[in-house]
Image (tube, rainbow, N blue to C red; front, side, top):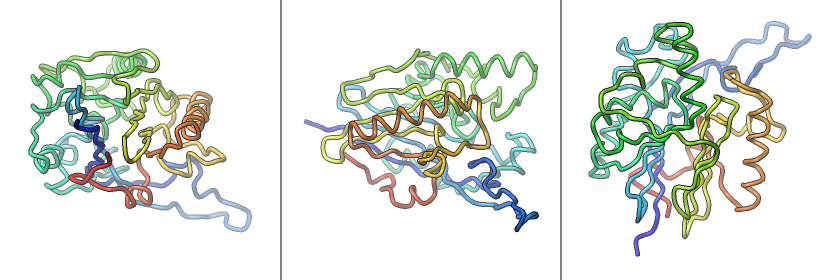
Length: 275
């Protein structure tokens, strides 16, 4: 019987001030009153799951194919430029596995920020595009922010990434959701109102918990927990990460962060996989 497989897809890199990932990363002191900022590089990660019953499940779609060619607002292109080659494009990564967007059965949006939801355009009028799973609080908060301010871009949300796309329909979930016996969606609010994580139990490799941007990196996760620079609700984030820590202990799980370069370099990358 075929087993569930877990792929980590490299989608290029973002460069930004480290203080966006860890709040007050380079805090000044009396000894170093003019401590400089640190510009660093972090990975952009997409997760793919092959499931014997559900088929191909994609967690996040990455950045829009034209992100750095004028699609992203100028501030985003300057504050967090995307470093990506043609090989890093999602359709190219899928092609390595002899897949196209039309072969994907489900898309899960961990949240709707520009570096996670921009590739939804690739799934217009596909079976996965007709059932994009997202937390209801993520939809409510993102649409509220965009439409109350009546702007194309608010914070890290870009309206055209997920509003008005032909053939894209959302399937909102509330709280945690079990997709299968070995795949659970976890509501981990904090970074955004509707941040989702995905817990996958594998036959040979054990349990993985991909928490996306609930914690950018191991420094955020701690202990002690250190807040990120982009944050919706600090109290909710602390509660979410303490819950992840409990699940990590319960299942002896490996927690995968959204943008941790050191961790990402240790992982198998697609087309290799964990099973």
